[in-house]
Image 1: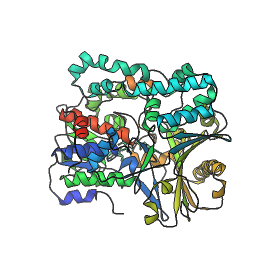
Image 2: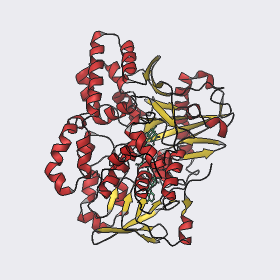
Image 3: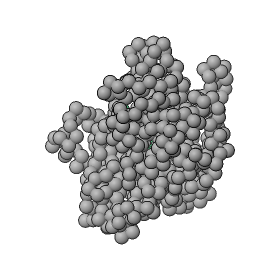
Image 4: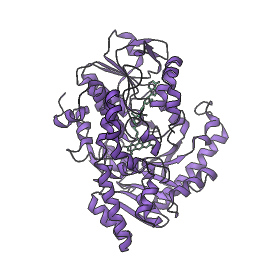
Length: 537
Ligand SMILES: Cc1cc2nc3c(=O)[nH]c(=O)nc-3n(C[C@H](O)[C@H](O)[C@H](O)COP(=O)(O)OP(=O)(O)OC[C@H]3O[C@@H](n4cnc5c(N)ncnc54)[C@H](O)[C@@H]3O)c2cc1C
């Protein structure tokens, strides 16, 4: 596989002017870059990591390859869905998707399994089989009705994010109001109004790892968005998650732009309250009339802007009230047999303890380190029809769980590979806990493992620059959705934000952040444009 983009060193060999600089090549950065490139603008994307793609990049070790931040995605198998149309538009239709099994997620509590099936009616009727009482059937019906309602009330909220501030002050509250009644309440508050069956609540919120917060802390809105996102089934990119960044980068570069890795931006240059360029880590200055940041709102405002600008717009106060999402660890496993030989499934497993209360199990884990509250297990080589061509006779698994960053912060200033025996022992302890979860559901894999390695929040911090190794940028609490600074336009003229913090987490959430950003910059409805277009270069 050819490396996507070019090394930063290339920039010194060319003398080009760009219409816009995008800082960060995650999904949000690449999406806005491609949208602007297709509008005739010459775009420079600067990525600090040695690989392009942010959380969609892959890493390789010992002859294996793993995904870092994409295991499945909803809403793309249907060619007419909005998410699919945006993907097709920014990749010129070059990105292919493959459907996972109809049973795409399986939640395991003790010795009971609960499957999530593609299609609202199928999913609902399966849940009713697991919970056969009339009372539970009634609650399940009301739950699905509520999900459908949430899906249809978000438009005004997002329109407000792209309105000029004067107009937003006049009609913004009116536009936002219909959604706020769902964002303001926690997932647990809403579900406990529908049912007092804690087992049912535990199963309905089994995918809480997809948004990083257990039911008593998450906004019901993010829960509903994720549940709706996968309602019509889940898919995986053919060729693995790095194909996302390679196909989008081709569009950016095909339209005269450039995508550079190992290109760390040190600061954003502001003159007369206007962003005019960036200063790189090597102090090189690159000017452009438009600067867009995909690095997250906290990184952008508090690390890349100068003291005067931060003070002038009270950015610290505005941003510090927003909590960050949790950190995570991931166990990357390699096998010297194919997915078919090992009978690996085309679905994910969420393996819990026998306690259905995710809030209780999260608190217990964070305080005592045991037992693991949830292990999310993904089988990428089974999902990808292209895998066997690239890695014949091999397969991989990824297992993720949420952890507090504080468990690792004392090693912050140590060097990768040389963090000491205590660190290695902690990693090994967590790796073994995660392996036990794997063997609980797939005991035949014992003795088959060729390679494993655990990433920690310190790894995430290195490749994303997120201070606390955050899994999803800002936390999806009710307060987040009340905050009005989370929009593409910033108080600094010509400086915009894209990615998950201006929309919601997830690869398609970050991508829609890019669509919002393009709408705000170009002052035209980019979603309508994308929906109406065939994917022309
Ligand atoms: C373990 C894990 C599993 C996940 N699984 C899924 C999944 O199955 N499905 C799904 O839809 N979503 C999943 N997600 C979430 C999804 O990956 C993210 O929400 C999304 O990719 C975020 O995109 P982004 O563009 O907002 O940010 P990012 O991908 O974080 O991109 C930001 C980029 O900015 C760069 N950067 C930061 N500072 C600088 C600087 N100073 N100079 C230059 N570059 C800089 C970073 O290096 C990074 O590449 C998962 C995430 C994780 C961590």
